[in-house]
Structure formats: structure tokens, C-alpha cells
Amino acid sequence: MESTLIENSIQGDVASFEKLIVKYNRYVYNIAYRMMGNEEDAKDMSQETLIKAFKAISQFKMEASFSTWLYRITINVCKDELRRRKETVLSYDAEIADESTLKDIIKDEQANPILIYEKLELKASIETALNKLSEDNKSVVVLKDILGYSYEEIGEILQIPIGTVRSRLNRSRSALKNILQIQLSEH
Image (tube, rainbow, N blue to C red; front, side):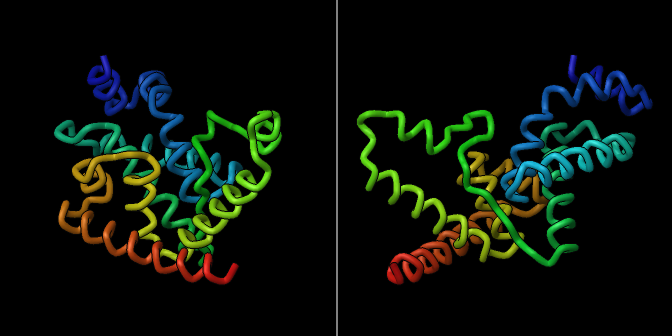
């Protein structure tokens, strides 16, 4: 089914491309949200990704998985926009579909206000630390630690060797640890 939609899309069938994209739209949005840090930019980058994907679908090679190809476009669109802005923003929020708010947490009668505060402070510290990473290192952390991709999948998406994925991830985690230690010692 998917391969038929891909083949039809390659031939320029817009309806097939739209059907194909429905399956991946949420994942594209989640990656864009993690990279951009807010809903409005994530929506814009998702839209830009889908436009670029449609324009480039004729170049898609059936050897790679469509999802990997699409996620690579998403990461590149976001990185290009961040470079254009000369800023790096990332949200470490829970998945968008699970929009729990402080109000929801407070409703829990067992919730301890001190624990809630500490959790929010830690979340803010992690966001700040992640925003200090380079775009390449941030991409690896987002894909592995937030979205749960394997080393192989990350290598495919970013078009880098698995060894590079591992080394970037180790460097990024080490940098995050150092940044967090400094931030938390200041409090």
C-alpha cells in the first residue's frame, strides 16, 4: 500500500502524496516542535517540510525508507531556519499529544508542591542546557533521547556514520551534564 502511494507520488499524483503524508504528519510535527521550541514555528517547519518533500519526491530512491527520508528533510528544514535566525531553541516538553499542564499536576491531591516546583526547575534547566548545544549535537540528542530512535535510524536520518552518532551523543551528554552541574550549583 505505502509503496504504491510512494510510486504514484513520484509520478506526480498529489492525492497519493496527501494520503502518504497523513501517516507521518504527527512525527514530522513532533520533530519540528523539539527542534524549534514552539507550536507556531513547528507548524511552519512542518508545512515547509511537506512542501520540500513533495517537490523532491521524484528524487526519492525506494532503497531507503520513506520515513527516514522525510525525517531527514524535517531536520534539515529546521536546522536551516535556526541557522537563518542565528538562534537555537528547543523544547524538552512531553509529547505534544500528551498536553499535561501545571493545572493537571496540581489537581492530583498527592502532588507535593515542592516536588512540582523542583520538576519544573529541572525541566527549565534541561531546556537551557539543550539550547546551548550546537545544531548537530542537539539533533542527535532530540532523535535519540527524546524521540527514541536507534543509532542506525539516526545515522540514516542525519546521513552520518553510526560511529559519528555515538560520539556526538556522548559529547552532547557530557556537555549537558557539565552545563546542568553548573546551572544547578548556581541555585
